[in-house]
Amino acid sequence: MTAITNKGSGPIIQEIAAVIVENKAYLSEIDGKIGDGDHGVNMAKGFGRASDRISAEDTLTDAMQTLSDVLMAEIGGSMGPLYGMMFSDMADHLEDTDQIDAAVFGAMLRAGLEGVQEIGSASVGDKTLLDTFVPALEAYDSALAGGADFAAALDAMKAAAATGRDSTIDMVAKIGRSARLGERSRGVLDAGATSCCMILTGFADGIKTRLT
Image 1 (cartoon, rainbow, N blue to C red):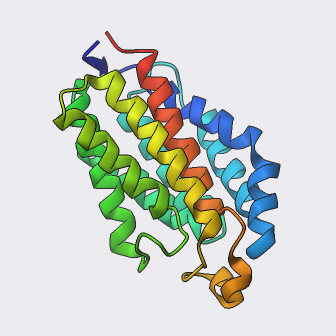
Image 2 (image 1 turned 180 degrees about the vertical axis):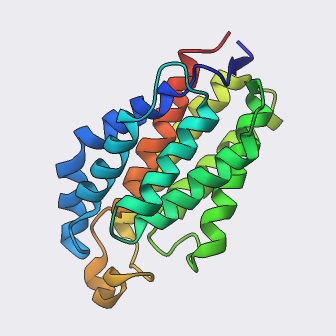
Image 3 (image 1 turned 90 degrees about the vertical axis):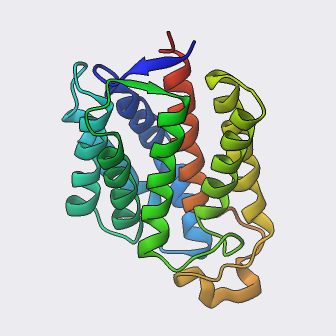
């Protein structure tokens, strides 16, 4: 189990989209406690529309670019540009690569993370999606460095993403509208960290079922 093919892996994005759409109400509920309350609605709209435009034959590259285009142009809120840039940078990195192995996937994730960091001012600990993404990627890289195979590294990424998401409960928001609440933002999951966990988990699950 060493790699997946880029061609035909576009449906991984459809599978992630299905999870986002299924959790639309939940994401908006937790966002509503300290934010605008529109995260789930906007995410479900963007991911759902993109899913409808992806075919079973699409490459993962093309599917991510389709999703990016929709998120950048067709949904509101602050997360559209952030996730749009993330998926665009991942697609740009992957390009026409035929086989996606552990190293390629890790580099793809790194490109997406750097894209988010370039257009935002958040750091780990600010109660944002970075509190999920950064430790998840660090755990993935650490697992590979320790000799884990692709599947085991994906499992490590999933576990760290969930831990990172849950860590935001005890954080005070320092970025965005919720930062106005100060200490009152403590005790609630960050919606972006939560949706990021769903995305990374979706990648892990989708890849593991396709590994050859």
